[in-house]
Length: 99
Image (cartoon, rainbow, N blue to C red; front, side, top):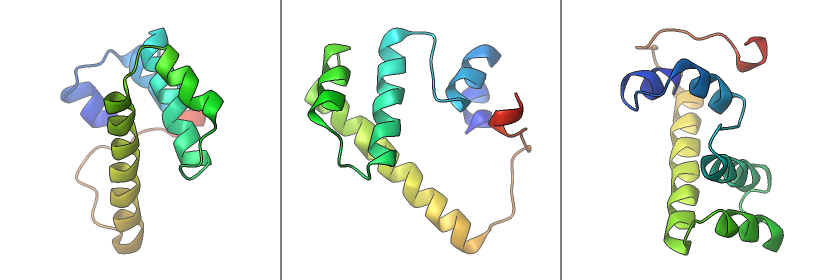
């Protein structure tokens, strides 16, 4: 994901590090990341407070559906990668906790 963020999304290095730690410097994007984390942690059973926070940050219901869809897509690809352990075709990155 770091490779994609750098080379496709063209995010600066400091934003990639923040994203790997679950944050963003932009408050609206940070709200989306926090909501995505809640979706993962609660397996989709987010609270009304979580939903209100992402909406209050300026996200519409359609945007929220996109966030949930992206969480689901990345979870699915991670499951496949965990099961089949494919050969890595991208550079290794340091664990986020060591940055």
